[in-house]
Length: 288
Image (cartoon, rainbow, N blue to C red):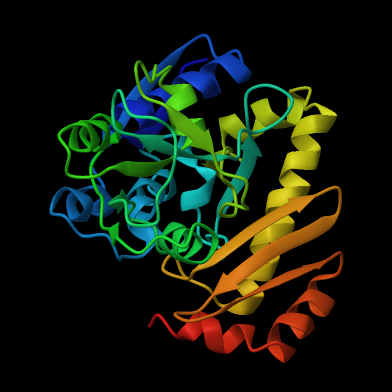
């Protein structure tokens, strides 16, 4: 049975499709690439736009039955599920790779100074650099991984922040580039992928008949728990929030422009109440 797989067209997106093929042992497939509105905006240098722009064009091809299954980065998936579509989160191996890396210019020592030119496009990463690293010179950074590394080594930046998972999927070797693995929480879904399909199509039958491991079940429980809180908070991709669910416990941070709060708990309603009582909703709205 030939499966029509739709995804974005970047090198990383294609590596993610290959991971899906490997994990689910897909033998026959046809690949459909789409340049989404998010890709277009990103290529124009835009950094603050809704993550749905990376997803909605692809979802349309599923709803119109032009493709059987879509592969997304889980962190791009909106908190609200799309009507008529199912999704399954997955990752190769037993655990997803969740860390961010602080990568330094070629042939320089991995020692961070607060006055270094630090590049990142993510509001969450900018706020973590400000509060956790005490960085004073944070600059916008866009482009694919090759472009970002090139800009770093050209001296536009002294260091940049990238997700370890993306580098790992591309088997990107940081030759002569020293880096530090940052010890902070990242965004919901980081390190995982999402397979999405229309209700009751032939891919749905394949998923139902497949042997989903306990690790995959736990991963879906974790990310769905994260999404439940994000939905309750009414966040967007431009919300400065870090979040991780693990072993039934949610941990996170919400960043305002001048302060931040940390939170944790195992019940969504209790976590939401704690966030609200500690001005978390106000901090979320400071960037809009």
